[in-house]
Image 1 (tube, rainbow, N blue to C red):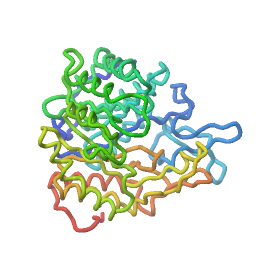
Image 2: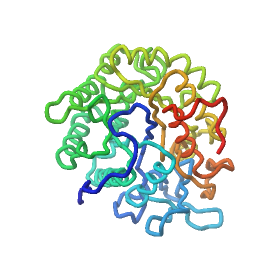
Image 3: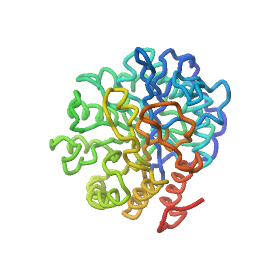
Image 4: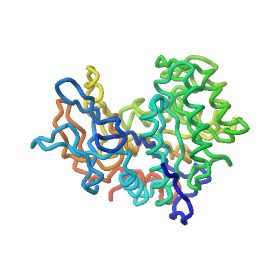
Length: 407
């Protein structure tokens, strides 16, 4: 595969040298389709059964702006019997379109997710590499910034070294990711994120392995030199809720330059979000500040994973945490800004599996017993626009409004 050339002048965009003043989105980039040339099937759209195909997402992508060579007919059917169309993250045109939407709405950039358990096989690693190059190209054309985020979920004991560290060496040696002028920097160094440190949900890998990875990324003479962002449990500071009750977690987090507690699913209404944020924000931020670390809170528009759990034989309520037309998202963002946040992580740009996507989705959805989320009568780009508005308030280009803004 040819690597991207950066000989052309970059598009105008945000400063790539700091996280301060930015709203960064998580970008999964994990949607594949039959016929996209990657030979991994319908990844993250359906779970293929012996008799039927079952949806695994609670939002359905809007493909009305896509060209014919971007659209794939999925195994799922619309109510009139037509195949439900989707895109593939392997197509550079589709990823470019996503970044165009970010540029139009003033969204700063993305943390590109790179799942350790998805790069075990050559075939899936090839897909993940293709998406990485698509993001690099789209970032250059739109002036958006980007950073790599390793998600450790699903890794077994010993695989942080054998998979993640080896992959990082390859990306540095062969793909020269940190030489990209649009790669995000903070505290004078390029940012690499590691998600999944210290959760109490029975992960195989250990805190000692996580600490070794953070030291490697930060201090290794050949492959280090980065500012490490850690995606941590919501209860990281108090060692409760979703966090391991182990003081070694704090020792591990001392190796990070940025701490980002995972908030998705931790509260489900505007009122509850404001209360819980008020309880933890000041002390979380003070812990980070006293140790010279940046504090990157997570905000999210809503949550729903009814189809995903149904495909696993489990039950969940559709629209578990309602979006309320953007009020849920807005309440989190404004509370964080009022309490002093200078940067925010939007979870997520394209996460349809858990119903947190902010990109354009459609009400023209396939048949599913669980159903799908709708746009609630709002424009398809409503959450893109709202995320842009959050960024303007964060940067003090606008005052903190008393109510949800209207277009």
